[in-house]
Image (cartoon, rainbow, N blue to C red):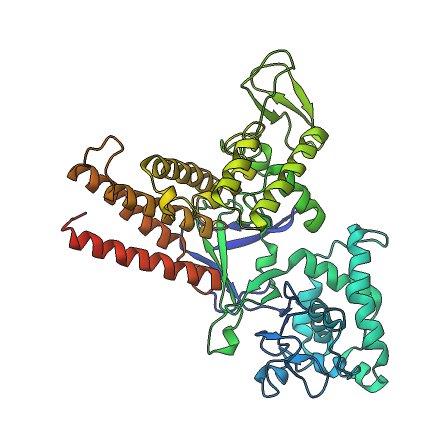
Length: 525
């Protein structure tokens, strides 16, 4: 393996390989939280389509979101840009090279923009353009796993890539190139090669979120070797705001929980708050492997019961047991009750969970009110363990509403909010002890716990008695601890738009809190 730029020979990791895992990284010495394992530039990167491409698209030169119908166009190829003077239009790492191909179709349109300008097709094009312009980077692209054996014609992945990327690039651009341009930039080009690029991107690309709201996909040589675990011990961040263009989109991989010498270095490719079956299915569909990590192997998911169901009994007697999968690594496993003999089939469980998931998504999509959220929480609590991931979603929304309106600021409501925050913090911390994937969730929960504790310290008790000075100090000391944990959880998210916005909100709360303590002459030291 090539040495990562900027690193010494004394690398904190070694590259190993096995038949089951392929290449993977292990710690070459004991690694402590905060240590940087590697930093490297992207091999190649490209824009993703925006959520509503008919309204906004990323500029192909700098990726700044632009209004689709009124934006300027590249004078050579006609693709939407922020300005005709955008520096990225001539930069070969951005639009400079691909423009030589895209100009084969110079016509501009204002209708069906999302179909006409498919930004997801640009990264595969940028990959194949490396073969002549940067052979070393091209070798690094080809060195990455494509899983073409799982993307054969007829498969969903193949047909989707074929329609939206391969045929699109060939019919609209590549087949229209004159032989001189094709020989200069694409000496080898075929449907098979483009499909391989799609497989490499789907398997290895990492999402880079930019401050303005657009997103890129990037390929990284060393980082892609890291294996997946549902309990990641690293976190990666990107350099997205820098004046040094050589550092743009560099990735840094940092240790978040202690890694002993010889232990595997792992990242996470799925959502930490999905249940085991959802995570494993996602990984099979997108990364082509079945996860067998300690969390996936544990029916209780590390004691969180994130996928657990309540037992409904046998129809004759009520049971307060919990249904868990007998073998979570078996897709056909039965779910057994912890107290009675009732068992349910996996398909029954999946059907129930899917229906409940639709109900939860519908409520959250419309920005559910407190009564709506409490209603669905009550209904689902009949079937689901209190820690189930659908319950988590609803509670996470509820804690952000309790204490915001006068009708939801009673002592009982604040106590309910405090307990809910602490329950969710336990789940979050257990599943992601190093804030590798759930830093924003953790920060929100600790911030909401802080606000509830501060509000409670200002209220008269429900029995009419005043809260004592010692009780106030205890509440405010806990509130101070919570706000500090919230800010610490976000220390690696400052360059992301959502992280920066949340940091600003929490920092203001901390400032208000310190001013309040000073005014009341309360010393928390």
